[in-house]
Amino acid sequence: MPLSMEKVLAGQRALVTGGNSGIGAATARALAKAGARVAINYLFNEADAHALVNEIQADGGEAMAIKADVSQEDQVRAMFDRMLKTWGTIDILVANAGIQRDAPFHEMTLDQWEKVLSVNLTGQFLCAQAAVREFMRRGVVPEVSCSAGKIISMSSVHDVIPWAGHVNYAASKGAALMFMKSLAQEVAHLKIRVNGISPGAIRTPINRTAWETPEAEAELLKLIPYERIGEPMDIGHAVVWLVSDASDYVIGTTLYVDGGMTLYPGFREGG
Ligand code: NAD
Image (cartoon, rainbow, N blue to C red; front, top):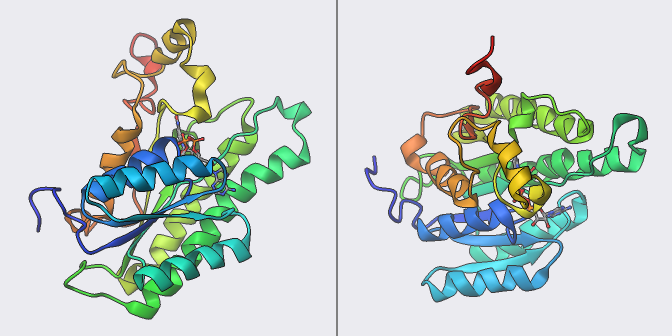
């Protein structure tokens, strides 16, 4: 059992969806630092994806960028084909790509509803299925890892905290939670580990309006007992542990990385 996380993923190949921004980019950096080869999936901002590949390579790591819309089956298949052809297999999937399309419920369009469900939920289904098929084909290679493969479903504290004005997003993350647990139960006997990470408020483009002004930041901090906004690398570090053999007995669990946001902060003084 490794005691240090240094190069704990040496020899492993990881795919991070939505890996060119925010939490995905920090996760790609953290996985590369831990010794994994990292495929960085992107759909928009191609230059960011290539810049991150260059950064990882300059640091002595191995990376590649792959364009694909995770909600489209043919594109997901092509992305996996390319990764498997280049690196032979996949050991780690971080199903991270996600979007918000916020609206008051009475104004939410069907398109806003379907778009969020298709990226946040169907995207995880398509990528996890492609990964599981490869994990099943290859099985355990003990010199690489004691499991046949690891999947992280990037969820949100809004898989348990209701969120007015964001019904589509909260529904997608609540569904992702049971998707993750049901899949974990189904494939654990194949030595495939499926777990979730539910970030709290992390400083990324997805929630810029919640932290970009001092007033917004002060309001947000009221919801965080640890009294700081999370940084993308808070999640990157958690991912590395959760996909490493150091967490080998952790199956179907959600790690809330949220500065205590899920601890009902209003009850610190109230109740
Ligand atoms: P972000 O907007 O910086 O990153 C989202 C990434 O997903 C981007 O790279 C985007 O291009 C990509 N993406 C969007 N649609 C895609 C598609 N169809 N196919 C492929 N890629 C696509 O935001 P982030 O905060 O880094 O979000 C990453 C994940 O973390 C999301 O699933 C989000 O729901 C979750 N999350 C974020 C926070 C937070 O506070 N930032 C909190 C909880 C959960």
